[in-house]
Structure formats: C-alpha cells, structure tokens
Image (cartoon, rainbow, N blue to C red):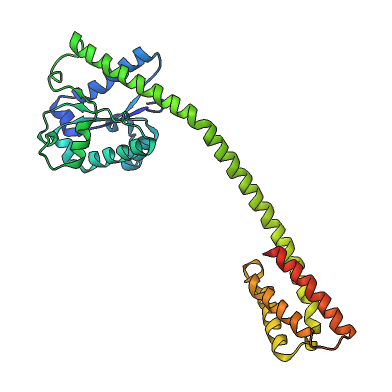
Length: 285
C-alpha cells in the first residue's frame, strides 16, 4: 500500500479464513466505495496486506494505529476473545475520548456475538454496543455485487465521509491554537536560551569578583573568613550548579563583619569587592 491508510481494520484472522477471505474482500469493497463517493483514495490498513516480510509486525501495527483516523472492528465472538483486538479497541476509545468524538470507531457486526447483550459482563463489548454499527450478519454470505450489499457499503461510505469532514473542521479549528502554542514554545525556548547565556556570563563575572576577594580574606574574622573561603571554592568547582543562595549569604555575612572593622583603606576595598560580587550574584540568581 503506497498511500497512508486513513482507517485500520481490526479483526481476527481465523474469522477471515472461516469466511473464505470475505472480510478481506469487505475491506477492498469498502475502500472502493469511499473512494467513489469521496472522489479520493481511502486506504484501509489490514495486517496481512500491509506488513512486509521482515517488518516487526507489532511495531508496524502500532504505527498504523497511530497514523489512522478510523478503527473498523469486525465484531465476532472471537474479536472480544482476542487480546490484540481488545488492545486496538481500547487505544481508539481513548483517542475518541481525548478528541471529544464518538464517530472514529465504525464497528461492523459480522457474526452474532452474545457478549454484546445487556447482561454480558464485558465493559468493552457494552461500549461497542452503544456505537452506531453496520449490521453485516445477514449480508456476509451475499455477493458484493447485489443491490442491498452495495447500498450498505454506500451508506457506510457516506458515514465515513461525514466523519472525515468533521475531522477536517476540527483540524482547521485547532490549527490556530496549535500554531500559537508552537510559536509560544519557540519564543519560550529562545528566551530560556538567552537567559541561560546571560547566567553563564554573570557566573563568569561573579567568579572573577570572588577571585579578587580571596587575597583579602585575612581582613575578615576567622569564622567569616572560613565560611566565605569555603563558599568561593565550591562556587569555583561547581559553577552554575552551585547553590547561589549559599554564596550570597556568605557574602552578606562578610559585609556585616566589616562594620566592626576600623574604617581603613583595606576594609573599604574589600567592602567594594563584596558589593560587586553581590551584584553579580543577584544576576546569576
């Protein structure tokens, strides 16, 4: 299949064998019916046709499920006993819920299934029972060329086309929002990048100021001297990863101790260095 499928047919292979390949034929005729009424291709993914030799089959199925708009489950007793079919159905039910839609799953009731009855204890089956479905039980043995089968295919094709139109409208409405979110995210990313570069520059300046303070630490009282010395060394080692609040507190504490030191040239110089370091520390924060 060269084009991207718009629908995914979920079915049990043994059911197709039992029907002598008529489920596969159903897919082919439905695809043609939609194409005829739509005026454009409508490919339906089927595992036996669309998984090439050597491809990881589960990965290919998952990719197809993510890419398609519709799920066409072929409802039979075996369908609800198949773990894979149930997973495919649950996946699409989740998508319908996220999109606020109820027309993306198009069940085809193929073989009488008691599990669909009200008293059956199967949540998935009960959810499917509430969906509008195409009843193919009385048609499955008929030729695809007879009038009532062709009418049923045409009706289902129209249902798909209407759902496609709603999807296009939803996509058109969502596009401005998507673009706005994309632009906002890009601006935010650019701003974060600029902020990061500014932080890096500020950190370099801060480290330079701290390096200028180190030779003059002896003017500080022993405790303040030890605290600031440790803080400077850790800041030099860790850079932007360092706890900036800790270095700021150490710088402020050193400033406070200078108030008790006589007003001499050395104290004034260290005070100026501490003030400059605090400015750059604020910019890093």
